[in-house]
Length: 225
Image 1 (cartoon, rainbow, N blue to C red):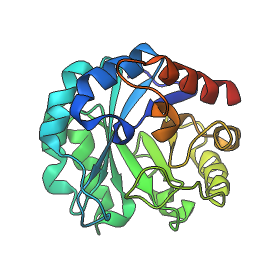
Image 2: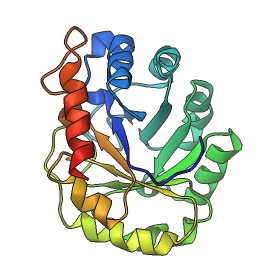
Image 3: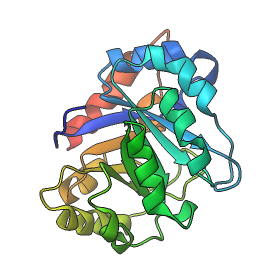
């Protein structure tokens, strides 16, 4: 993964057909996706349960781009190696998920994966300040984590601006997760974001048998920024 600040669209498979992940990933990549975002939820840290390392390992051969795994789980540390073994290129943990975030980020990097730090909407940018030299990505949640299809929280745009300033010339991506569509994408990109996670905004209107809308949706987000 070579670092660059060009805008990347990362469709979230949370909005894909769960019975058809392999074909969905191939379809959305063929239609222009830059990364594939995998939302892991445990029913404990967030009020929903999605998938674990076995699913990640099963879909990995279908992903030709970047496998971006977002762990909305607590505790995180016992599962890092399993997700790395499953082929994650980026593993993101929440600053709110445990008391020892430095240890978590060190553990992620020790596997060879890129380390991501996620901030919930109510967590200020300052929470990332002591960690900037330990991360490869900061994921700004623009909805409260747990479910797809939620409304974008506009006050988070200012947080992106603050983070971009704090990051300076470090090679750290700013990722936006939640409510990204052609109306919100320009706001966060102008503030400094370069990875846009989009679920329903990418997958709406299309299917494996009719993937053209995926490409139209991706291009609409890209054109908006």
